Image 1 (cartoon, rainbow, N blue to C red):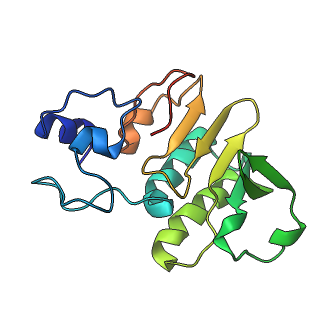
Image 2 (image 1 turned 90 degrees about the horizontal axis):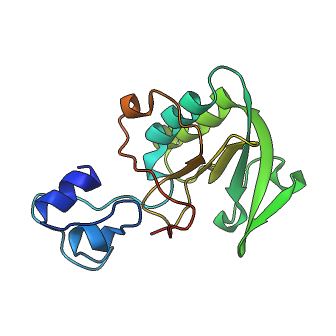
Length: 169
């Protein structure tokens, strides 16, 4: 169920751009009983694989190159990960590589089919165009861009515009 519908069903008036799961439902993640009509809470991390795959394809159609980075903290990596450049975001380090967008999207799609463990990128970006974050500890996927694809509504995603100063919930 989209968060906007869930907020309406629970009678909560929230700004979805900055709302957390608790703000929308009144339920603390992993601790409280779910709200009536909700069968499960959002999956943290790479649970949105197929949706993220469609978003990457929409943002970089065809064989355009994108950069991907996977968090080092998983404790395992794919072949060659140790030789890749390391980027740091806050207190986390990620292994970065460039791939055609189609291959990056397949990493998200195949993770859903293959199951754990599979190294899935947490960050995907095209320099100076957009950045997508599917962080392991977040219940939402974040896309930073000033130029969203025109067919964003057709991807089956619930999305809201945010301001640079909005906090990540």
